Length: 133
Image (tube, rainbow, N blue to C red):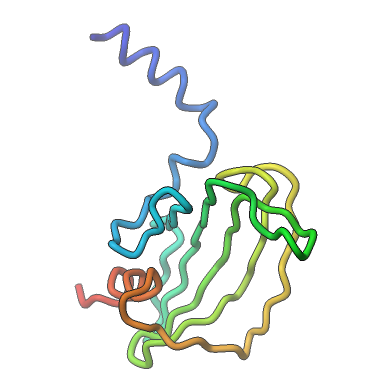
């Protein structure tokens, strides 16, 4: 048992960023197509607003027609809890899975707030970060 634990501990430092990311438990995950994760250490509450980091990891590369191929994307979102809306603060596409490989920053419109619609992954995120302690 001690030997197995030692082996696991030796393997941990070489593991990619997966250790920081928590898969969202939601019926709105696109199982088999993509998985959405958050990094709990990045959740920040400031008044009615909450910021968090999100990772979307796709099973296959995305972006065919645009020529901009990617297999994962990371974003930082800001959620306005009482207004049930969010905006994207930063956005980066990655050629590899789990935020690895060549990166390309996306264009972000900071004034673009989006409604949080029910029965979506964003609704699940809203419920997680905006719940009262």
